[in-house]
Image (cartoon, rainbow, N blue to C red; front, side, top):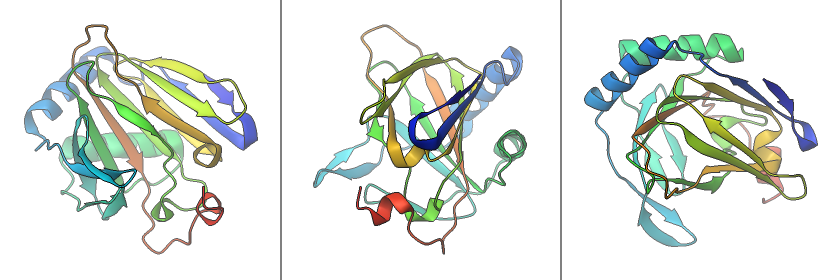
Length: 201
């Protein structure tokens, strides 16, 4: 599925990007082998613990919400998934943020990935493993978008998506199992501020 978004963004959703057995094996390996941590971030001037577990792998340090992420070295599994995601998105990703949602109480607040290290129009490739969770996108004037991202699916956000849309994974009262999400990114440490950052948005 490819969907054009308001103001020049684009979504590409590939369901069953990983075969079920492959997705299940990757979920089990990452659950077991990643040094998951619950880290503090700054939200609206307050320091809080993220409502999920995280890990950062790659070739560059990345800072968001007041949290500096120093990368861990690539594992063979993550490097293989990175190369495949890079091929699918047409971008040479050099980093990946892993999020572990333990149950429906874990969540991701609404945000846009527009830090200056990501460049002007960043491409983000998001791989879901484990339980399906609702992914929601908001725009100032366009209708909101809601997608159920199942294990093995790959969602690519490109174009101006990060300038005009915010996305998140809300809490749910429905009983759900663990989910791991991998968001592959290209970090450009020397990149100039994005157009969205220059507007102060």
